Image (cartoon, rainbow, N blue to C red; front, side):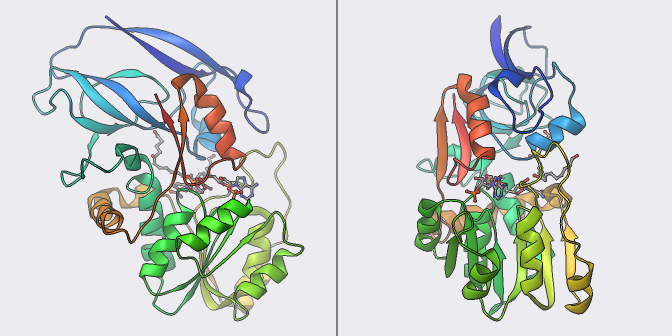
Length: 329
Ligand SMILES: NC(=O)C1=CN([C@@H]2O[C@H](COP(=O)(O)OP(=O)(O)OC[C@H]3O[C@@H](n4cnc5c(N)ncnc54)[C@H](OP(=O)(O)O)[C@@H]3O)[C@@H](O)[C@H]2O)C=CC1
Ligand SMILES: O=C(O)CCC[C@H](O)\C=C/C=C/C=C/C(=O)C/C=C\CCCCCO
């Protein structure tokens, strides 16, 4: 018998999550049935979506939702061999039993030297979000100017680098000087710390006096309300996330977007990366190739220890991560 550890949502979040909102439980797992396999989490992801989704999709006492890179440690499923690694959606837990239906194998061309945790970030759901959001929603063209916020994060850092590969000028915003330095190191043309600029409007105008063709929005809120006024005519806004709003106890009341939308004849489209579920293999193959070629750089914020999952999650929401926030069991 294997005893799994799992983090459950003890109490729905009010504002920013607190460590006291979580409870660590032990779960005795039964023996495998035919067709089942036993997974041991190696790396777990903490993502912003967990904040709004927990409110919408979870009840108190549920195991926190989430994905992990897991090693198969026992198998009664001929399609999966012991020792293989998969991406699972088993939630915040050290061990899980799967029937193999909801597992993603790592691409067969995954180099031994490449950290498998990248399957949760640059070569995983966040990277795919950047890939499809940029190519299918922004539809960027060479020579255009792209703005991305939360640019030093899992999604934003890939957006900027893919836009550079696509021949664009790229402007990024992030919440620390270290993150701004990182953005310049990975090829952003302009980058600024939105927390310290005297005026966001001026910082955006200075970075691109002609404005922006595409705005890849990860943040929403006041940033988006200001940035929309600097879009070029016929610009496109990809609404990827609104992390500045996820922890609001009361909804923010911002300026309204209709006037700039009309006068600049803008397109604004929200999206969820699962829209392209049937093309994830295409995206992962492209992302892996760019990473192996060194054209897409990555950084991971690794927190050691399963017991530190809540801290890693809260830290990511507060901007303590540079690159993809990961927990190493
Ligand atoms: N639509 C989709 O399918 C998907 C959407 N997303 C969304 O993309 C966004 C980025 O996700 P991801 O890359 O995983 O996370 P990140 O790795 O970027 O981490 C979150 C970052 O958000 C920034 N942030 C937090 N609070 C604020 C705030 N109040 N104002 C401005 N920035 C803030 C912080 O960076 P900083 O230092 O810059 O403040 C923090 O590091 C999120 O909104 C997420 O919900 C992600 C995956 C899929
Ligand atoms: O296990 C699950 O079901 C979650 C799987 C997540 C997965 O890896 C795929 C998609 C992730 C999408 C993320 C989307 C965002 O981050 C956007 C977040 C929130 C938008 C507002 C949601 C409002 C809910 O009330």
